Image (tube, rainbow, N blue to C red):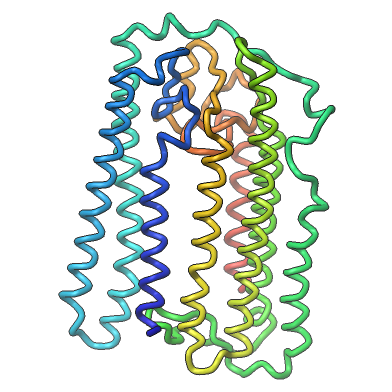
Length: 367
């Protein structure tokens, strides 16, 4: 496997993953939510609803295929350039393609959200919404909705082993240290050996662990509102869904931390002349973990429903961002895809956002 092929496989896999996630968006959302708009009971199979989902998928697929074709064409046309030019093209093109694909899918979602809102108004479905939702205030005291912190001890052990090995073999690490490889698998950032250069990736591991701890916390802390028609059935579904999500977060987080430890080992201790290729190849590991997580979440979320209040659509800006000053909840279940999001009208939401940004920025600066 060549350096360039390893890079294109990794970045191409990322593009395929983002495209697949975008195409699956209508299937990942609760069955009674259409692009962020709540549907009354029994309207999920309406021909217009199904047509709107098909239109979204075909539009996103067409745009994604067009962006990929343009990226490949540009890569082929510039394949005869110098080595420096090739490095720029092979690095920038796949990243730009992924960003364009995300923007295109997001724009099509907003367009579909507007169509879904108009459809609901034209059909008079607002009058069919349930007048209330049931709340279970005791469920958290009776059973856990997410796995406890002790289940993250293996994650901490992986970080300890990675940092411990770096400390143990510190004197044997070659000076200077390779910090980054370009898209061709060649070193393009080298720094003098220092604690920051050697242990920087371990700080990033801690940041990743904190992110998964936060995600696991939101699973258990998010608002739990039950459908009034079948509160017990909905409660059982929510328990299975949330515990399953918590387990997937545990496994995905552990896999990513192991992957980062492997990358650190190749960068510090070397892997022969092909370490850049090996790092590019093992870059497929988190992609495979992410794919497995998406399909696992699809199985967990199959048939799940939201329990919206009348008029709540107005609180979901563009169908994706929840803004409700009258809701004391900080975390709520998403209407787009799977997982939980913040109530952006709550002051604590911005504090959580600032903490997340700090967890990302600080390790990068210190590293």
